[in-house]
Image (cartoon, rainbow, N blue to C red):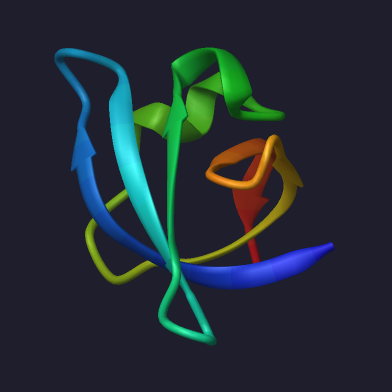
Length: 64
């Protein structure tokens, strides 16, 4: 799994953006979280693990 940091997380909209260690950005949504309860505690700067889908989308997102 890849790792990066949450750059933006809009909990009300259930959408966010991850910046990976190489500086590339990936979008993700509430549906991409392995544990939906983490949406309540996910914050900007949190380190996360994820899988990359279609180049710019993260899935299977979870706190690292």
